[in-house]
Length: 352
Image (cartoon, rainbow, N blue to C red):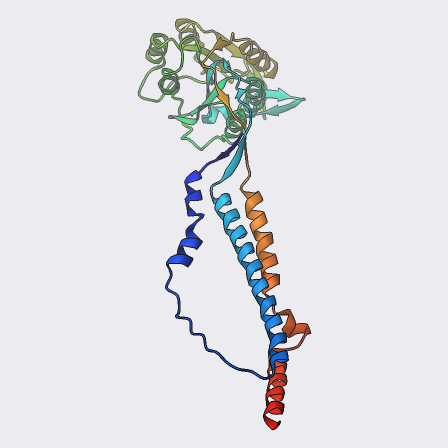
């Protein structure tokens, strides 16, 4: 269906005619003159007729150009048939720890040790791509928690913001787990019930923020928000030094008891990711979250058409410019030559 975005612009169509009618005109003076060299003036009259015809054509072109410009200014567009958007899914808020400990290289990909944050970015990015139909949000936390992306259907943007999240953009010396949960509750509490899900990933213990994790968990349970907690980090790595090799636990500070308590209090579940495969399996299981019906949404695809009348106006303007070029001055008899010929005719008549 054709539609004009600004139809009131069409009211400008009669503007040039109104200016023409209302503008003051110079007084016209006609005088009779007897000319004996009528043949010469007849030829000049023929030239005048050509000029008049050219003016008429110019007037028509100018009128068409004005109509096309006004039509383009009204922004015509074509509205397609209504299309239903996917209306099933969850409201998933992803809360990711980017404290300094996430730089620990205790994960292995292809016989190569990589940092925890690198593995998290890769696995969660794949998870985000698979969540078609869900609203996704992103919270980053370290010493404090910040909303990086509010709930949106734009999965590509959420993935990009996660990829750009680097250690150090937030004060990295502490971990505010409770504050990140509280921020997630703030953004999820207005969403439909039974669709509110927070997925929290961390490798440490809460040691910062204004709210403790247990209190934040109780608040989430009151609001009907389900929290899935994920503890990441290897149980054991071999550390080699001058005195030999020894096994250490890089996840000694991981507070699994609190993470388990939060998940169980909200109807969720605690997962332990000791390696890349564990983390992949966890997010594959989270993929099986049951979808619920939400408000049906539709949109109508729109195709703008203003460039067609605008382009036509430009083409006609070019033709008008060609019409106004004095081709007779370039290739024919000049007005000066016509005037000399007319003077010669007058002199001949006077000599008679």
